[in-house]
Image 1 (spheres, rainbow, N blue to C red):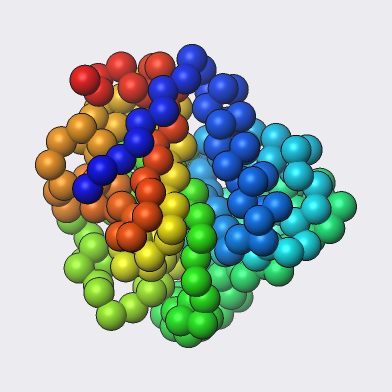
Image 2: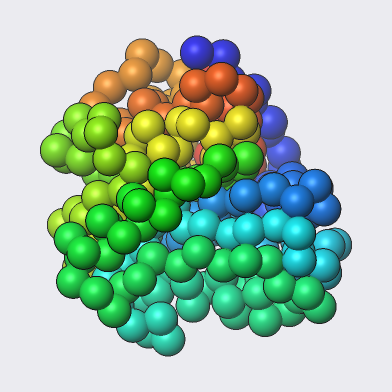
Amino acid sequence: MEIDLVVVAGPEEAAAAAAALLAGAARAASAIVLAGGSTPRRAYELAAAAAPDWSRASVWFGDDRCVPADDPRSNQRLVREALLDRLEALPAVHAVPTSLPPAAAAAAYDAALRRAHLDLVLLGLGADGHTASLFPLAPSLDVLDRLAVSAPAGLEPWVERVTMTIPALSSADRVVFLVAGAEKAAAARRAFGEAPSAATPASLVRSAHGTTTVILDAAAASLLR
Ligand code: 6PG
């Protein structure tokens, strides 16, 4: 499936490109799925500054770690600190209910997602090729009848996760990957430059009916031809 590769100089430019898409989506009253990890933090800060009113938008989480919402490992905490706490007007926030046991949290998120249409999904890429909490060769990659599932930790931090599935992520009108750093270059090549494979889960996530955009800095793009 077609993807648009956007290669920029460094991590700051990559964050700015992702922030522009997020700010535009927020202004357009979109349902926006956010990523965890460290890479998107700066994009969230820039998006909050560019578009301080998210009141017509809604925010979802592509995955979260099964920890309390104020835990430093929580993706919800990251999004609150870098984005929501900086806004003048808040979106509707659909957090993963991580106070429930993982299977129950996933079932609740699945039920909520069944009533939603996702406009923009932001994703990261792990050096092992994972995205959201869809890890290489994991059973979650084969799930077609659920929009969210619980998943064991595939890497640090070693806590259980709840993750959107490939059908949920691929349902979005726009899927955007944000990838920065030389340590992601080999995974970026497998995810965006080679045939899809369960060994590289990010290679399996593409917008089914819309656009897939990959924003990379030059270091992350260095092995892509
Ligand atoms: C998570 C993420 C995950 C992340 C990648 C990249 O909860 O861990 O959603 O899929 O995007 O692991 O993370 P970094 O940006 O920290 O490298």
